[in-house]
Image (tube, rainbow, N blue to C red; front, top):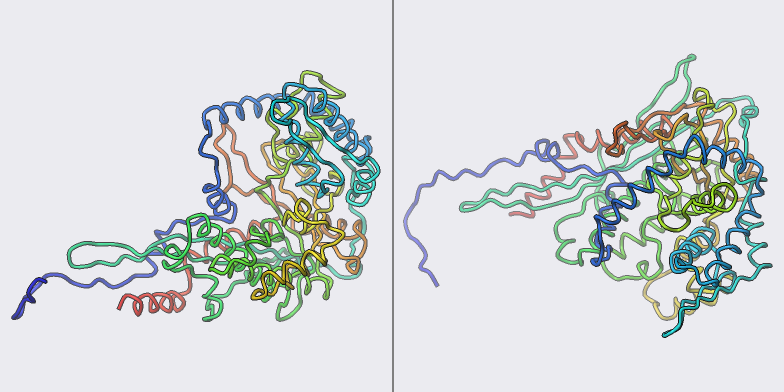
Length: 542
């Protein structure tokens, strides 16, 4: 052991003050979409050809965009007259025939069929079961129960045709004008500089921040009221601030998923306390940036006894609270999703074109996601302005929490009660009641609406929570449409792609305002809050 030095020693070393404003201003700020993508990076297959995938995507994207004013325009015109349920049934039946017929891309078509039927439409193996070839064989088998599939499509699809003209009717709120609200959450990844005598290091932390906007007309003029919590209390900071110990306690994938769930928690708490339970008058419609469903929705993660499990459970509980309150007070709770992964609409567009318009059109080779494809299909040069008096929507598709939680592939949906009872018995320390309740009530109807003149303006997917007590599905759709016309649309340039012409998302103005506010509030957090957080770090460092 080295001897302890004696006597006084002078040093030029000086402990620097921790400047929270400086730290925050240099932080890396992520939107929900950015953070979600980052959390998925850990799941990527290492045996992957990024160059090949990129060039294939480029080729396919260029092919489809070049066909926008010709082939896709023709598809748009025809899909306005094609029965929605029938086209999905024909799609599944035709893919079954091709897969079992031994086409060269059977594996790709099987994957696409499962993506649409199981992941998108929420069918089960009783509806569609795809069996890959046995060892030494090349023959695929697809079992499709026509009666069950037809019944499921009837129950889960709303709209006469695949594409449906829609006209704005009278104000659904009759004698008064609505209040339209929105929320968003941003994430700030930074580090506290800790100057030491011989070296300098930093302690990383993640700070989540939610904010929102209320829109209404006042004295004939549009008015945006910003809503945020400048002084989060100790209980809220537990979910806002991800301290360095999380990286020590969790594997990297769990850590990234925990951070993603933390964003959900922050936004759900904001939606519930500051929008749904507004001090004065609650909004009539909430356009929540992102999907309504939490990012981590699997029951296996709900019961994990670590910090990831803590955040997953809290997100589930808060989501349930938001839906329950929205239902009780009659508020339209609607998600606005830019980062869309499903291909439940885009696959139908590709298949229909190949089947009825252009036999050389590719199916299954590289299918664009719904957001990309519907931006092409629904964007029309004939669209005038953004008043949404007349427009076109896709058919509405019902998607349940059970589908998001992947229960339709691992449990009998008709016997969920016994499934959950067994699960609870095996995990008595965790109360799964909130998860069970979401499986009962959490249903959304998703759709795209054409409100742009060209596909350079990407369209988001809208999805609203539905309960019969809120009125008919058509009535809720009219409320969403009226709210969009009422608050107007704005370009979101923060999510542009690298392109010769800027690619922007066209989203509700209140959602864009909430998005900008959440970033600005995060950059310039109230001084008192900043001092509070830094005081905690000082005490930790001591």
